[in-house]
Image: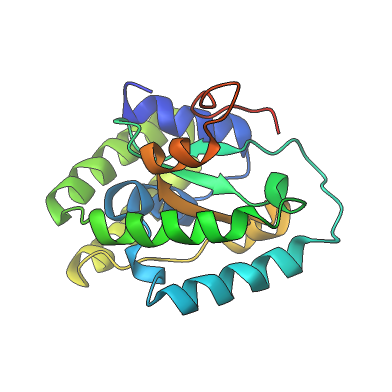
Length: 189
């Protein structure tokens, strides 16, 4: 990825029902990483085990990308759990990457503010119906120091997201093998 617009275009193509709250969430993840959800190694492992159990037997209703872009610098990505649900051995490695990611990504309110302004402009061109809602979310979020928000109900119902935010370089080390590291944002499982 080269621009924030390309990241947003990728998400719109992959998730056409994306809402303003979902755009805010992906921008937040691309700036601040996973730190807000990681309290400890034990908590991260327990939450991941619960998520794997929740998705283990559900039917996969869509082609799920293994990695999803979050920032133009390709430093952070969402690792979708759906393609990993039959690979329980990956759990410890994912917990380790999640912990390392949370400890090494800090982000800044200035960068979040900049990306939100770019996203509002992008919405004007691509999702005009979400433009005012994104602007409405931005004002109180900025006043509160840009907290993490949940996905919209529309997004949750349509896509049932199950992923973790990680540093892409750390995840590539985990997935490196005989065939080499995966391409970022590979859509094959």
